[in-house]
Image 1: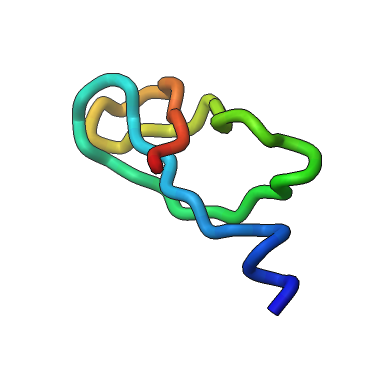
Image 2: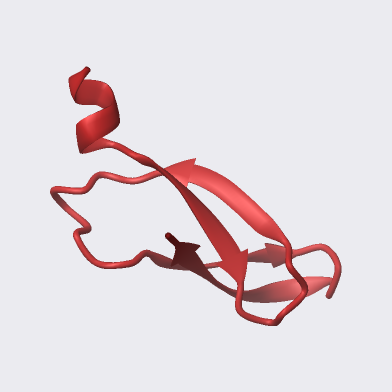
Length: 54
């Protein structure tokens, strides 16, 4: 049970408005705020910021 509480599954949605998402896990103890990562958006063909969606 501790696995789901400490490392929840989060969706990362593209800030470019394409609607593309990545699914990942994050450590809630190390990153209590919303996660932001630069990842590849295949619909744009370039790297953009992806923000955690709740």
